[in-house]
Image 1 (cartoon, rainbow, N blue to C red):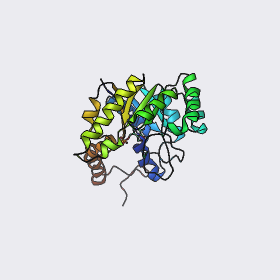
Image 2: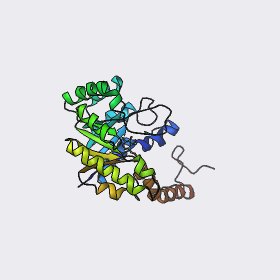
Image 3: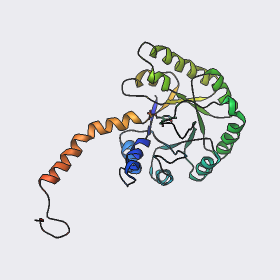
Image 4: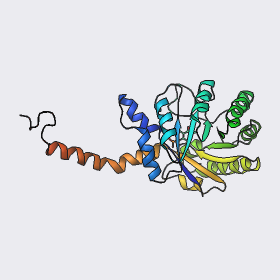
Length: 249
Ligand code: PXP
């Protein structure tokens, strides 16, 4: 059965919009686990636009499921991973100006460097997954790098119109077959939603889907009414002024 890795970056995005302490992705990860998350995924970006170093450290200490650290293939990030020891590292391409991860890694053009990073991490027991498009040549290069896993980029499938979606699903299906023939284990993610997830989850051999934005969006939708109700109750029925012991005015 396909498992679910919940990506909580967008919770941190809301916090960083105000540089305050809420919402804190660390206790939210526990709620995701209570909801059935099999793992928690965070992307520690070079520019620290959402997840912070402190989040990764605290998640490592507090979550009971698995911590999947998404990161760029840089020596700074490898040093962090070697210290924090996540349960998996997913290497992703990263550009400062992008809104989100835009494509899979080009493994072919950076095979030597990636092979070195993969072996540094796997030598200490951290399995490495490479985020790649469902492309046979990239998958073969992933295997040659020594990675144990790949995460198939589902962005093209998610963005395709309904007439092209079957074709993109077929690419994912073929990619998953090729990866498994090469001896790689297969995850997938990016852009998946409540509307488009089922055919991907049903692909044979699909081990885990990493899903973030749509879950955080749904959490807002299902939680907003209660949040407003609670604020309105406070405003309409204020307690004694907590500082002065009386209702002001
Ligand atoms: N997998 C990878 C490698 C990603 O970079 C992302 C986005 O951070 C996701 C999965 C989750 O994508 P989404 O937020 O669109 O569900």
